[in-house]
Image 1 (tube, protein in one colour):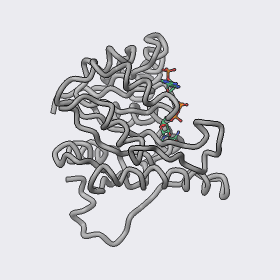
Image 2 (spheres, rainbow, N blue to C red):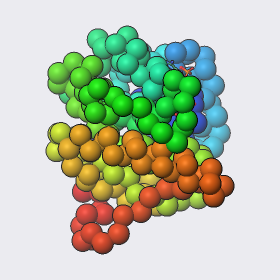
Image 3 (cartoon, rainbow, N blue to C red):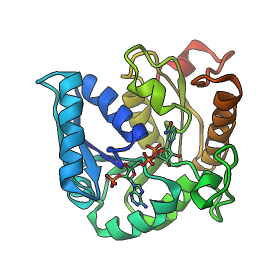
Image 4 (cartoon, rainbow, N blue to C red):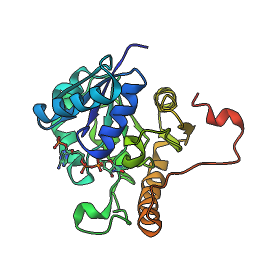
Amino acid sequence: MSRTIAVLGGTGAEGFGLALRLAQARETVIIGSRDAKRAQDAADKIKQRAGANAKISGMENAVACAVADLIVLTVPFEGHATLLKQLKTAFRPGSIVVDATVPLASSVGGRATRTLGVWQGSAAQETAELLPSGVFVVAAFQNVGAEILNGEGPVECDVIVCSDDVEASKTVRELAAKIPGVRAIDGGKLENARILEQITALLIGLNIRHKGHSGIRITGLPPAAYTGR
Ligand SMILES: NC(=O)c1ccc[n+]([C@@H]2O[C@H](COP(=O)([O-])OP(=O)(O)OC[C@H]3O[C@@H](n4cnc5c(N)ncnc54)[C@H](OP(=O)(O)O)[C@@H]3O)[C@@H](O)[C@H]2O)c1
């Protein structure tokens, strides 16, 4: 399938790791940033790791958004709503927005082991409220840490994908499953993003307590649930 994926905030740890993995999976990826030069520098670093044939470039966020079919949001919660409002007219109808944002309390000076209450229920639901109609919102990747994504080995984590649009959810599950080690699981409606976002705070606490890089695996489902389809 020919498509372009923009990773907004792709200069940061999480977005860089996702962009790297997607470029390694032969997807066409654009790093988005508030600064085009910073985006290009990050894209160059990914090319060094993913190989000269990697289809990766860097652009300012709005430019990246306007040419992408699928947009991944990896910005800190404190910048999330403002960025979406700025970019509102840049999203193309029919595009898919994958939100990996977690409303950590550290966004307002609190602890990274706690989440903030978001009026809409979750950062992903806030995204759905702020985006124009005709753009499909999917919550995913909140529980895959940057350290794991930026490492060399397979990403031994399950990615639970939530959306109110069945086709958009399927598209994102198939994409996530292209990352070695990832099993993508249909997590139901977008409202379940609230739970995914809270799990991230728990994982951060586990990482601090046990000095590691934790992820999640779901057991006990029929094999078909893990295929990403
Ligand atoms: N780090 C993880 O392990 C992890 C795991 C799961 C989910 N997440 C979630 O993914 C998101 C990004 O995490 P991160 O650790 O990669 O964060 P980060 O490195 O602090 O920020 C990512 C990028 O966001 C942009 N940014 C920063 N402040 C911004 C603002 N106020 N407005 C617009 N853009 C801004 C920056 O890019 P430019 O300056 O180039 O624009 C920055 O490089 C967060 O919501 C986090 O909760 C992170």
